[in-house]
Amino acid sequence: MNKLIAYSLFLMGIFGFLSCETQKQASKLQFSFPQAGTIIRSGNPLMLKLNIPDKGSEVDSVIYTMDGEVLSAVLHGDSITVDTEGFAFGNRALSAKVYHRGEESIVYSNIVFLPNAPQYYSFKVINEFPHDPEGFTQGLEYHNGALYESTGQYEGKSSLRRVDLKTGQIQRKINLGRQYFGEGLTIVDNRIIQLTWMENVGFVYDLHSFEKIGEFNYVSNKEGWGICYDGTQLILSDGTNRLYFLNKDTYREEYSVAVYNHQGTVQQLNELEYINGKIYANVYQKDIIVIIDPQSGVVEGEINLSGIYPEKDAIPYDNELNGIAYDRQHDRLFITGKNWSKLFEIELVAR
View 1 (cartoon, helix red, strand yellow):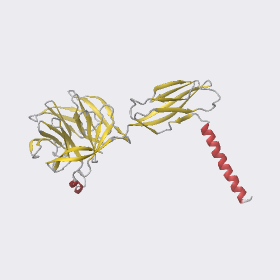
View 2 (cartoon, one colour; view 1 turned 120 degrees about the vertical axis):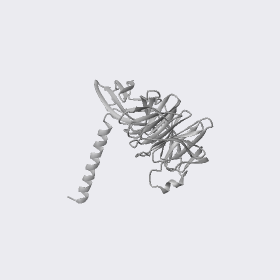
View 3 (cartoon, one colour; view 1 turned 180 degrees about the vertical axis):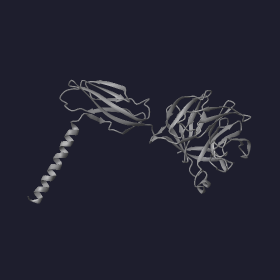
View 4 (cartoon, helix red, strand yellow; view 1 turned 135 degrees about the vertical axis):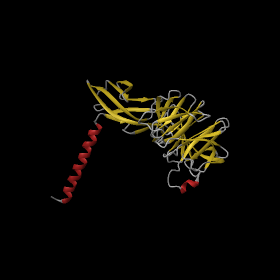
């Protein structure tokens, strides 16, 4: 056979195959929108539309569901637009049950529902204060003119401290047992609450004497990272993208929220501070603090603190930004890091 003729027949076969496949896809019952994995932004309407073969007759009805919950039932149609207000963020499973010509069929898709981009901030340094370079900062709180600090590391290096803000001098200190790694810290009334990392125990101290007056356990599959107090509940981070809300007196978990930004989950949430109705969280190993809405888990702001402490570049590890404290009376925001020799009062600058 002539090579040119053979090649032409080969191409015709390929095109014929592709044409058949296209026709099969076109005639297949499926979601025409959204395609699997489509990102839908907060506040934008969600259109659900099907490709239904045999358009010669109307469908009887379509029942659309999300994560097993009915969104809407549509009579004699194949599309609907849904208000996304109140949708939970993350991956959401969609299905459509179609009743057509006496038959029932079901098709599936999914969306990734994400918030809009946060407000971005840089910073302005207002003041610098001394900080103990041996202090492996894991928790920080400002209260009545003093700093309260939790430091980490094993072998008896973890501690609870009260520190003079202006001089950096340690006014009171107790060390944790060698088996404990100190983590987040907050103050509730006249109690100091201090977490430990993998030991699943929190310690409760008298604010003035540092005498231990209690302890509590959190669920064994959680680590203790950061903790803050919103005036009603304790809020705990465990290094994931979830925040856990605890009863301030019983320390029992009541519920949790997942944290998302416009790109997806925000993992490794670390030290926490509650400021004017929002949760400020260090992101482990990043020069970033995120500002989180506690009800929705949406990251509403992101503070880039790159370059604030150049000396940390000389240390290969264990030097991360970690430690947020807020002076509510004078509206002052303080930050520091692990083994930093300085603590900074900063002002946010919107970008």
